[in-house]
Image (tube, rainbow, N blue to C red; front, side):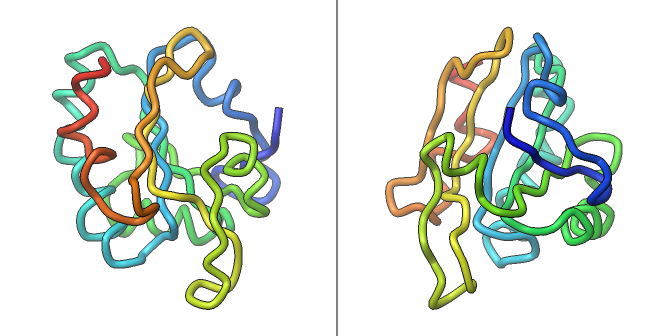
Length: 149
């Protein structure tokens, strides 16, 4: 029941609000607009959006330790509007609860979210992949999550 924010600081939600009992994918990134997140991770889920829907995925969400304004701007700039929920975990509370937080204060200024991808079904995490080095882009990419669907 930890707070995440979607469209604004007033749009407070939980992951249960976003996913309900639906089948979905939650992927986490170290930061909006950072190179790998912006050029590879998010674009892969956008590219595979229809294929993931065909596999029964009803909700796709991207989470980062950023504010809701940054996440919404990133969603608009990337073409994610209407497809991928852009979720702000402003204090890394959700990342910490999921065990996917890591301290990158010297580089990004605070604790961030490791790069991960989780398949959620019926309100529970069915499978989760976390990049071994926290930031790479291999096992958490859209084309690698199909095996868990």
